[in-house]
Amino acid sequence: MTVLRRIGPFEVHPIGLGCMNLSHAYGKPPPVEQAERVLLAALDAGVTLFDTAALYGFGANETLVGRVLKAHRHRIVLASKGGMAGETFPDGVKRVIDGSPEAIRRHCEDSLRRLQTEVIDLYYLHRWHKSVPIEDSVGAMADLVRQGKVRTLGLSEVSAATLRKAHAVHPIAAVQTEYSLWTRNPEIAVLATCRELGAAFVPFSPVARAFLADALPDASGLDAKDIRRSMPRFDPAPYAANLALLPAYRALAQEAGCTPAQLALAWLLSRGENVVPIPGTTRPEHVRENVAAADVPVPADVLARADALINQRTVAGHRYGAQARSEVDTEEF
Ligand SMILES: NC(=O)c1ccc[n+]([C@@H]2O[C@H](COP(=O)([O-])OP(=O)(O)OC[C@H]3O[C@@H](n4cnc5c(N)ncnc54)[C@H](OP(=O)(O)O)[C@@H]3O)[C@@H](O)[C@H]2O)c1
Image (cartoon, rainbow, N blue to C red; front, side, top):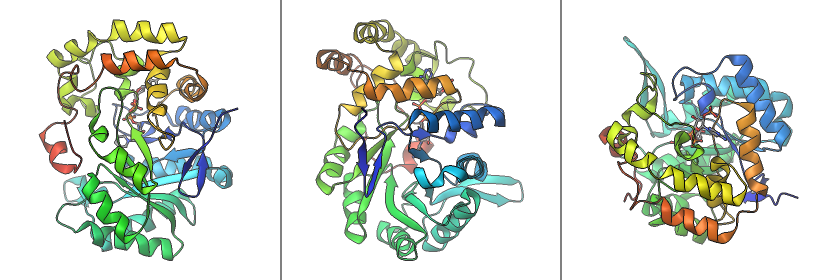
């Protein structure tokens, strides 16, 4: 029997579903029928935490999630994010970070409408807008809690210091930041601070955007719009160096009797009982594989060897390019 994990007042399956990939990020999104099958496969497999954002597909992802999961709203924990969204300009829609109280209120109203719900269970600030005091953004989010529009608050890609400031304004139920064997930044401070404050930690990109799923043997052919093209770690030379880690990693998964993606997720689950990864996928069979990671008994010594094999000392290339680095507040190796 799968042991559930806690995010604020919610008990959730240890593996959530990151819905971004159904509308955004890794090249052309899947056909809508396939996206619907992925969401329903997640429900069938026992997933309760569904993660979306105003940004994803400039609203299209929330519209999809809202439509498909509406009938199941009572049995899921719906997480979305504001403070970064698509804004319309004369030359098209562009991504804008805006953490002003006015933008937060507007983003939340738009999300509620697209999600076809009266309340969002977990509402994250997608990025701390560095020219707006975090207290102001979180203060506006706390108002949304008081108004019954959102139930709990989260932050994404913040430092421990920012988390503490925000938590002093309103309890923070979860921090969502990139974390996996190949991205260890939360180990510097944020993981410990979440434990101390009683917040859940939600690792995004938990299978390293396909690398740890052993599903991207060649990054040179990525679609022109694939966001991995802007990430130094996927550039040809660093990626070739990173690929050289995979044969030993694959062997560890085999030894544990699981798949590479499951090993990546099992390692994350072993980092703390407050950790709830949200792998993203466009395929129902990958949903089932990822969810099963919660119940795969990976021996501690295999987890330790995976930890020693793939970490910030052995991985080549930064996770983000210069622009994305300037937008996050996290402590970085
Ligand atoms: N807060 C933030 O700023 C932020 C940033 C990025 C992401 N996120 C959230 O985190 C979620 C997950 O992150 P992510 O999608 O970037 O990275 P991820 O979950 O680490 O990786 C997704 C990639 O891995 C592949 N994959 C997943 N499971 C697989 C399996 N079992 N076998 C083979 N391939 C597999 C997927 O391809 P297939 O489609 O072929 O399965 C996809 O290309 C997103 O959906 C989003 O909700 C949040």
